[in-house]
Length: 117
Image (cartoon, rainbow, N blue to C red; front, side, top):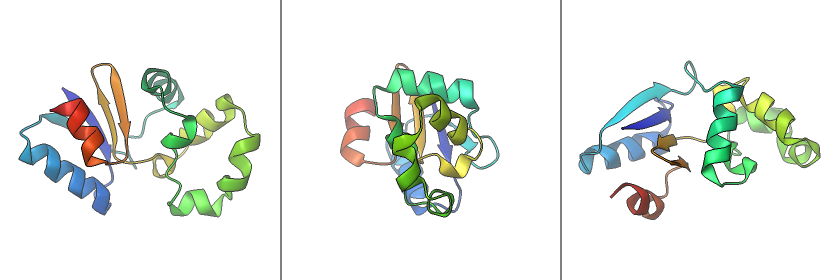
């Protein structure tokens, strides 16, 4: 069973959920704004993902821009970045999908098909 963190007003999340439904893939849906992962959970997802930590940031989001993170992230430690991500679900790239042994950030159809079909 997949866990999918989404934001209901995000068009990318809506496309991703439609894709999952069209492919009859079951999932548990969590609102990333109100049920976002805490630091320990994010740390586990990051370790499992094999992705760069920057891939976990919603770089096009308002909080990211308001905090000036494009200039600040390179000087922050991984611990500082994970702690920051845990403060606001809107900083986290969405959809965030957690499966059995893998993590997907964002919706790239080819990548999802490779992992989920």
